[in-house]
Every structure is written in C-alpha cells, then in structure tokens.
Image 1 (cartoon, one colour):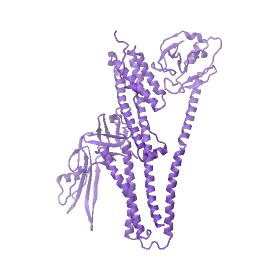
Image 2 (cartoon, chains in turn blue, red):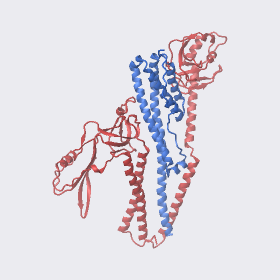
Image 3 (cartoon, chains in turn orange, green):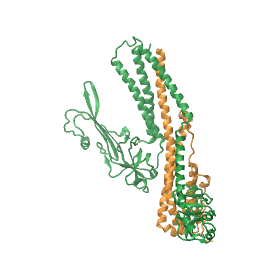
Image 4 (cartoon, chains in turn green, yellow):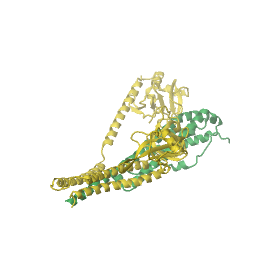
Amino acid sequence: MNGTFLVGLVLVFGIIVILVYVVGIYNTLVRLSNNIDKAWSNIDVILKQRHDELPKLVQVCNSYMTHERETLESVTNARSAYSRSTNVDEKAKAENQLTRALGKLFAIAEQYPDLKANQEFLNVQQRISSLENTIADRREFYNDSVNLYNIRIEQLPAVWVAQQVGYRARPLLAVAQSDRQDVELIFANRAA
Amino acid sequence: MHCPNCQNDLVEIPTLEGPQLDVCPGQHGLWMDGGEVNLFVENYRALASHGPGPGVAAAPWTSCPKCGGLLDQESVLATALLACRACRGWWLPNGSLTQLNAAARGGAAQIRFDEAEFYRQAEKRALQSLTREAGQAGRSRHQPCAEHVWFWTLFFSAALFFAALILVAGIRKILAPGQWAMPPGTTWMFLATGVLAGIGLSAYGLVLNNRKRLIESIPTSAIRSLAIGLVEVSGRAQPEHALLRAPFSGMPCVLFSYTVEERRTSGKETRWETIAKGTSQEPFHVRDTTGRVLVVPFDAQLILPDSKATRCNWSGTLPEATILGLLKLGIAVDEWSGEKTIRCTETFILPDETVYVMGTAQEHQGAAESMDNSARLYIGSSRGHEFIISDRSEKELLYGLQWKVWASIGGGPVLAILCLLLMFKLYGAVQ
C-alpha cells in the first residue's frame, strides 16, 4: 500500500499539472479565437468610417464628373453590397469591390483639374486614403491573428484540445484574382 | 431590402389595398414597386404627368433598395420622391404617399389609408423581430455542446478518481498507530518549506507561461492603425520633451530604473536590503515606419538587460556622481557614517533604441475619432492587463521566458515530490 501511496502521489501531481496545462491551452485557444473576431470588428469600424465619407465624395464628384455616371454608380453599388453582406467572406468581397471602384474613381478624377482643385474633394480624398492605409494595416493584422490561431490549433498538444472543443482552421482575408488586375480607365470626356 | 437613408431592413406591412409595402421602421419612408402606387391613389392616371423636379428628402446619391441602382429625384403632382429608372420602383419619404393621394383625388372609388399606421406597424414588427432573434441567440449561446460536456466530464472524473484513491490510502496511513514515531523537528520544517516552495515555483511557472502565451498570441500592430485595447508595438524610443539623465551614470535616456541596496550583517548572515527603488515616470514616444504613439510607463513591468546596470560598492567615500544621484532621488547620505556597502543598480532605455511595448491603447480625454493615432491614443497600464516595456525583441523576450517556464514547471513539481518523499521516508511512511 505504501508503494501504491507513492505512485498515487506522483500521479496526483502529474494529473494536476496536466490538468492545469490543458486548461491553459484551452484558454489560449479561446483568446486566439476572440482576437480574430476583435481584429475583424476593428476593420469594420474603419470600413464604417470610410462608408460615411463616400456620400460626400460622390456628391462632390457628381458636380464635376457629369459623364462618369457609371463610375459613380459602381462606388454606390459597392457600398450597398457591403451593407447587404452578412458574413466575413461577403464583406471582404464587397470591400475589395469598393476599394477597386474608389481606385478607379480617383484615377479618373485626375482628368478633371477643377475637381482636383476643389478643397472639399481634396479633404475627402485625403481622409479616404488615410482610412485605406489603416484598413490595409488592419487586414494584415487580421491575417496575422488568423495565422497564429491556425498554427496553434495544429501544433501538439493543442491539436487534441482543439479537436475536442471543435476549433477549426479559419480562412485568411484574400484578394480576389480579378482585383489583382490593373484598373482599366475609360474616360467619358476623352477627345476623339 | 434596406432603407436608403439608414440602411435598416425594411419591414413588410400588409395593406387592405392589396400589396405588401416595404416600410422603414425608422419612419424614413417606404418603397413601392412599379405600379403599386396606383392602388393607393384615387386618380392614378394623373400620376403619368410627372418629370424631374426639385426637392427630395434623401441625398441624391441614394441607391435603390430593390436593385441597387441610383435613384433619381422626381416630382409627381408636387410631391417629391425618388424613382429608380431600372426597376421603376419609387421611394416615398414619410408623408409623401398621403400627399400624393391627396393630390390625385377623383377616381371611381375613394381610397383612405393611414400612412402613420404603416410606420407604427413597421416599428412594432421590427422590435418583435429583434426580440425574437435575441432570444434565439441567447438560447443557442447557452446550449452546451454535447461533445464538450462528455470530454470534460470524463477528464474530471478520471482526475477525481485518482485523487480519491490517494485520499483513502492517506487516511488509512494516518489512522494506523505507530507510524509517526519521530516528533516534528527542524528537518521536517525545511522539507515542508521545500514542498510549499515547489508548489509555489510551479505556480510561478504557470504565470510565466500565461505571459509567454499572451505575448505569442498578439500580433504586432502598425502604430498608425492601432486599435483601442491590448496591443503590441515595436519601434524606436524617443523623448516626449527633453532627454532624461540616468541618476548615477548621467547617461541621456528616455526611461530609467534604479535600485539602491545596502549590505547588512546580522550575526553570521549577510544580506542586501533594498533602501530605494524606482522608475522614471516621464512619458516617451515609440516611433515605427507608420507613425508614433505616446507610452506612459506608470506601472509598467520593465524587462531591461542587466548589461547596462552599474554597481558600486562603497566602503568609505562615495563617488561624486553617486552622491549626486542619491541626493536627486531624495536619499540623504549625511547621516551615513563608518563603513557601509551599498550597491546602486540602474538600467535605462537610450534614445532611438528599439523597444518592445505591450500595453493597453487608450484614448486621450477629449480626443476625436477623426484625429490620427499619434494625437488620439496613448499606451498605458490597465487593470487586469499586462504592461511590458523592454529593449529586447519579442523573440528574445519569448526565449527568455521559455527556459524560465520549463525550469519552473519542471523543477517545481520535482522539488515538491522529492521533499514529500523525504518527509515520508523520515517518518516511516515509505518502507
């Protein structure tokens, strides 16, 4: 029995240490998962700020770019598409579409010197550019968070805990193939 | 469909006239598909004579709730509305439908409706829908996953089973007479202290492990896009105003920490007793390639290499620089007499040195959201969150923590078990 007591004592210590270690792994997985959600919410905050700037931008551009209706509509449609989207994938797709539309709009605006000289346009353009830099940084941060999570749930011994509690790998924010192509600029007021 | 003004979901409201209207619960307006408006005005033929006109409730860039196209301003019988060229639908701002019906009187049948009632019903249905969704979400959140329950039940059952075995064996041993032949002595006290120390070391190892996991799990943020909350940044340290001077060496720095210890002898024992300790509290900036942010080092844990520490043992006359440093720190040296050995240790962060900071990004009071991060945010301490400032890189920090964790978590239980074994061996519990 004394031998049993000794073995039991060692086992108790071992179980306690393993138990606490497993709890620590679980807590880490919870933190990593919540970090991803927080990272996405932080992107959402900046996207909302950008959306709030778009009406001013379209309003200013409307006065000068009377023949670029299609370009302005694409910005508005992309904004609406984001509002209708319900999950991260759809939102990311809509945002890529909006970023592309805005890039095209700013490129076309170069052909309108009166518009470029408009102070309100310059202010809005600068604000949107600054927000887009922040969005780009936060997208990288989101991908870093997802990467850390995906690595952790595939490492030993966390993989066993992750499988038991149902944690699965999450996708990174990716840029669609169509968005990697150069923007084609068609100017409505181009001289023949 | 969404309201063009507030983007809230439009609520479908049935009407006596037939069609279901899509109404904004925020009372901004309602949507009618092409032709539906004919059912709500007495003289619908009069609607044909309309064209572009001034005045509309919503902004000119508003998108169509149905097809997403741009809505055009139109004026029908002196009623301002927005019309979609693509799908022929109309967005009628609040009150416009009533106004339109009043303007288009004189048909075969009288048409009376209460537009305000449409909005009331929409608001009520939106509220009911929100309440239902919240209840369902709460129920789904609180329903335990069957797999989780089984896993943790088995795990804790096994742990309790083994603990019960040990308890039973221990109680039997305690009740058996003659086992505790030797009275407790000094050795027993040391061994008991060793057991407690082993448990404490294990607990310390777990704390370090948690900190290590926290550092690993937070990616490094670019300063220009910092979000409020626990963040990790890396960059060059720069003073907010003038450079500080380290108290004993006079080194220009942005942050310093000092400890003054005195050697005291008590019989045969000699120990170092801390007589003064502190850290500079002046904020400094951390700048990376994207911007800079203020760091307020109050309550921060400093992890600085010992290689910059300076020590001086005084036995007799203190060096001038050390006396000045002690006086600056408010430590009087006049009453010291005879032989005294003190040890002054200082560590500091030099200007433009690369630092690692993990802390809580918070807003300055009165800061506006439109301001950039360098003006709006600062990094400081927050209750319940780590706050670390180090001139080591994240990789070096993790490496340093790693071996401490292994030593503590590995050594702690071994120490406790060894001391327990010795205790039982001394008192005959192990044969």
